[in-house]
Amino acid sequence: MLEKFSKWKGNRSNHTTPSHSLDESAIPKHVAIIMDGNGRWAKKKGLPRIAGHREGMKVINKIVRKAIDLKIEVLSLYAFSTENWKRPRTEVDYLLKLPERFLKLELPNLMEENVQVRIMGGLDTLPEHTAKAVTKAMEETKDNTGLILNFALNYGSRYELVEAMKQVAKEVETGTLSSDAITEDVISRHLMTADLRDPDLLIRTSGEIRLSNFMLWQLAYSEFWFTDVLWPDFTEHHLTEAIAVYQKRARRYGGV
Ligand code: IPE
Ligand code: IPE
Ligand code: MG
Image (cartoon, rainbow, N blue to C red; front, side, top):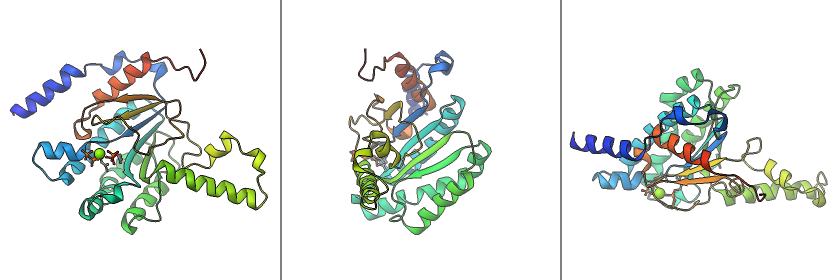
């Protein structure tokens, strides 16, 4: 009870921006989130790290609902990086079970909410059960026209760039593309975000101030918002607060 109260108090005192105070005409169209801090959340509570991941999964729902309410067009969520394979086998196994679990619970609701699920990352090296679950979700929701929920799963930006370079090189080799015709747009179209606009706003939780190999190309001119809040404690109010801060920024793109 005491703990619940202090948590409520903490959220309330630090994050009071109500959604209605946002400028509805300046909502970021693409929001990307590095969902970090599950392990530390669990540790603080004396629980195993996987308990943090389980709790973190529950937060995704709330944030997706809020993103729909706010009419965000694309929500990219960093779920598992190409570097996360370095973690203990049991933790990796657990993390790679979560997409399946999440989709089993949520796919019908996502369908109902007209959400289009996408995955960016190396599907071929994921366990079969994970790849199958996410492929099914992408397939079932591909014609939905609402929020694009883009999970970065087994994703690394450098990996993505290497794959893009290989494809471009192949096109040059076979003569379908001349090297002089390689432009920023050509590179963008070979990334896993090919038809998505760049993120307007990047959020990272847990107090780490780094990108950890997330969307390096796409974030070139995005606004960044960092918070000490651990991902399992992240709420729709924090999302609103991040957007309120975003709306006060002047995006100049190198101009004046
Ligand atoms: C984020 O939480 C989830 C993933 C990276 C998969 P972490 O597991 O990184 O939690 P911390 O950073 O160790 O607290
Ligand atoms: C980034 O978090 C990856 C995800 C959130 C999936 P990490 O916890 O893996 O990043 P580092 O190791 O602190 O940079
Ligand atoms: Mg982490």
